[in-house]
Image (cartoon, rainbow, N blue to C red; front, side, top):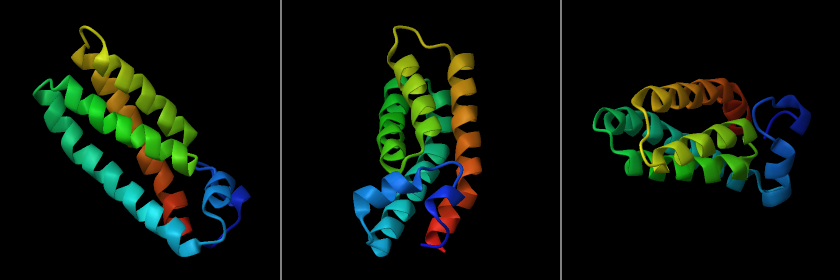
Length: 120
């Protein structure tokens, strides 16, 4: 893994390194799986939104929340928690869900350079 823990802005590489030790291959596998999960989220969440499948969005969001916490992407994890709770509420509003989805997508785009650096 290139760079130092201080070189990342969107993830806490120190946390990830503490969990995985010096197993750089394992860290890379985690990042590849994380990126796959977020790509799935981006692909599926819009369709679920159009269908107003709140439980499906909450389930997808739960997965990215947990995975984001694991790699130390705290801001994305916090936003995912807010979306998950909104989708589990009694009557989620489409506009509010759209705002959270857009923010999660934006955070993911912002994480790409850090994730790619880990994979380098």
